Image 1 (cartoon, rainbow, N blue to C red):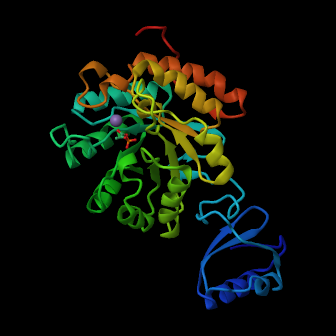
Image 2 (image 1 turned 45 degrees about the vertical axis):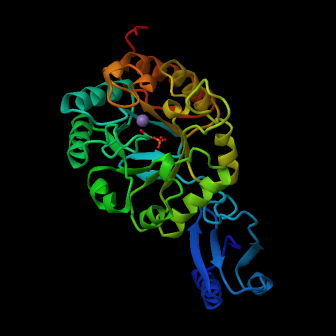
Length: 349
Ligand code: PEP
Ligand code: MN
């Protein structure tokens, strides 16, 4: 149930409504918008009569939420949520681009990647130190050493860091080095991990599961939100369909669908979404045109020798060119994007 307070409701009236809801065993989450406060009431006594709230002083409207997710829904919070870290806001006017290799491999590799993506206009450096690989025999990541290399490379370039956390036991460690904790597609329904991330204050980048519906994805976000962490960024990264030409099918339509259903920001990952280097830029352009709040892209200084996901990693020159194109697309739909990076140097590889 969502309780929308009057614009002029006093703090006292809001507190009385909260107290009444709590008395009836609701968990209450308050969202204070520019004009009014909205209370999200989850749980509660069976058969509770919502009219008892509707008649209280200061209450404008009481709505039952039919979606199974509450705190993630736009009914609970009509305004867009912008997730902030440092000076950046994902979900504001500016489109934020996160880029870097799939895995942190060596000091030289991550430093070169950081310099290249920063020059092109990325704000956040990506790189996995704990890698969820389909095979247990594949490279599993450098662990803490990888996180340290990633942080140092990002700091040298003034970038923020996003890195994956695969397990509850890694949360504190990854949060010491990263500004955003990535939950991978394979872990979207690891509810123990999501609950624990709900107790963290660090922003969470929640990738859509390989075969997850949008409703299941938003319910996973609900686990983090209901634990008290309001900083959730959703990431569409392609889903498994009957099509086998691409690694996954990039569901661009999920972007406007999520924006309608939820106030949370949604970014796109065209690298995992297609699995093919030459398909990354077209899908990145499409995602921004469809309203994505940002992108996360695999960029590697030497992608043909990458230890993971080389075929879908783009060259720095391709990333430069893509950023130049996004600087045309973003303003066309009323968004801004970093304008100050060095000029694009040509149409090389
Ligand atoms: C990754 O970002 O490298 C990754 C493993 O992503 P996903 O969980 O979307 O497969
Ligand atoms: Mn990858």
